[in-house]
Image 1 (cartoon, helix red, strand yellow):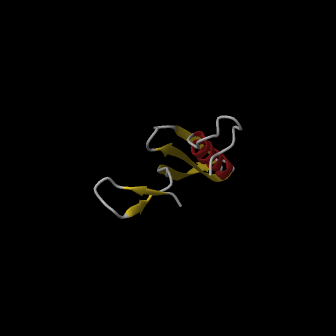
Image 2: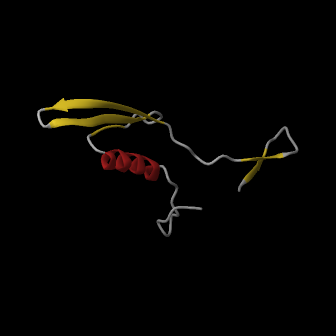
Length: 81
């Protein structure tokens, strides 16, 4: 865990890991052959938006957004720890 000193305090404070906020909307579509669930998701901070018809599409969108903001080592191209 990284610790940062505040300029006006003598006690260190833990730095929170970067987080994301997503809004997900789901609904049921009635089709001739039955029904299916559909939805859309929005990354609240960036505004990125994706419609989806199955769970793997939603998961892919969220992972793409998380990895886009992940810091990388300049020389190795790997995520920092």
